[in-house]
Image (cartoon, rainbow, N blue to C red):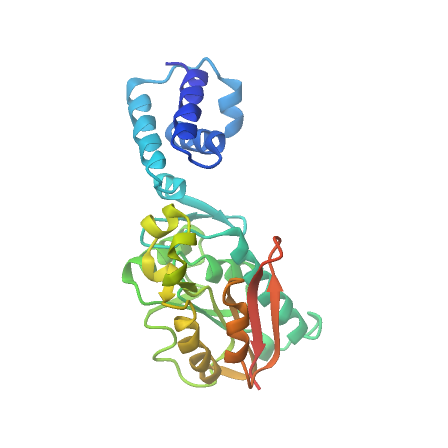
Length: 289
């Protein structure tokens, strides 16, 4: 079968399976199988696929038709301009999480008087809670080369992926990884920033979550408990203890829990919620009083 026919057939089968963005998925999976870019697909429509390539492509298409995320099939996801390895052991990084990075960078710049300060004491100590693939910690390591970074996860399998990503990006010496529950084991008043994309979906919302998310992504990275705020309720007091005076907590949230998170931050200063590009509340930030 030639490339253009394989692609046409793949688009039809994914459309029939009601997979979103069938053309994009068909192209992405074919690029993965052939080890090529999109330009190659368009430049070589008559290229003959080998039997092995056709077989591997069909297996990948069948997995995608069953709802298995394309990122887990290819083993890769882009985040903050970085190519990250992902497996079903970790949550797939989303573009919305980049708002967390933007918030930390903005607050750190303000903290450094507009970025003009050069005192070593102002280089931030940051901890990323529930690091998963390592996407947040790695992005901050990339953007803040003088920072001291720590990353925690309760899952040893997730930490293995995060460490692999750090090594691939030559950032393994920049981040200290810890297997622990939230902030357990850290001394008080240690960090300038506590950052997290915690589980924040309530079990009562299961039916509203995409099937492929609730079926294939790690459940304990998606669902927090019955209401969705259970992990955040535990994280906030631990963050307050772990932060230095005037340190910042920056966490990803959803529109569903935004109004319930605000009361949990009573006693903090400069509490503010940032919306994502769809206008949905996405990041909560608060300064330790």
